[in-house]
Length: 340
Ligand code: DAH
Image 1 (cartoon, rainbow, N blue to C red):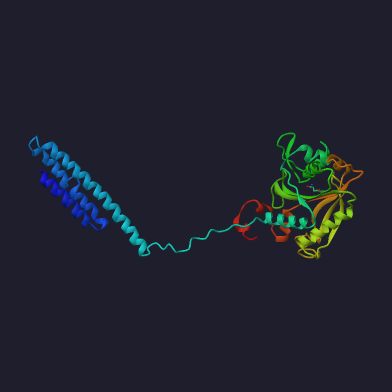
Image 2: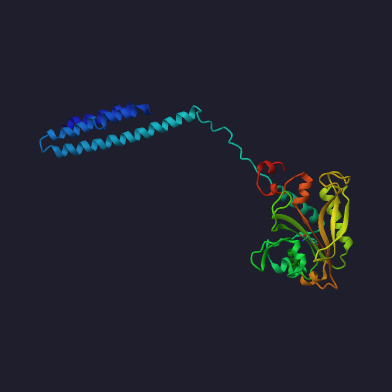
């Protein structure tokens, strides 16, 4: 009986070594280790042995079974590894093939416009001051000379967080923060950022939008400095041929207050659909900083003066690029974004 087992062991190992294709492995397994295989048969044969020989023979059968199983596992792994290597060698997988390109994104039109504006004002010596989008009622209104119940509050439909806190309706509250932080030093900054208004969303109005505020505070700053600055900006931004015009207006935080228009960059002032046949486009609200606002910022209005302006970002960009709907700026449609 033991001889038969040893013979099976040798035979099993030899025939296994002869298996060269993974596909032949199951057949070998069935022959030796399967339920009707030669080893299982040998195990069954144990019952016919005299009782004193049974334990030794049983032990040996199990040892051989384990040895064959281990040999089978190792051979199977070796065949699989060889198969993979062969397929790599014959070029079934071409590792020199270039990868699929990752599509690079680019900056949003708003970001690019904002950067251009920053660049132009930087050349004129303006630094950037960033202020929070969630503001106190005081900064957004009160300290800008718009007390509670003042009718001018109707100019800004407001998102209220609670009765003291708002989502800023314009970038002007940054003026207060900047002055309080830097007085009594002179100031020359722009304050870009997102603003919010409680408005119905239409092709022409969004409840979120960008503004760029400007503020200069110093000794002897005059209205002509404001006009010169805005004219220089308009020409750099929209072309050297641009003309500007100033109209009287009203804002609580400036005195006097004006609106700045430029001639339409599409028709050159002769009138077209974009400028509604007026030849002019609105660019900014502006004025000389109101004495009350200067004082609220920590500057004595008897000694200091300043100018301020505020402009929207999306409207001029829409005119410039003939974008017909402001909602495109915020709904992340790649077909729109990829055009700029
Ligand atoms: N904050 C104003 C608005 O949102 C725009 C503005 C007008 C800003 C005149 C100014 C200014 O700094 O001087 O309508």
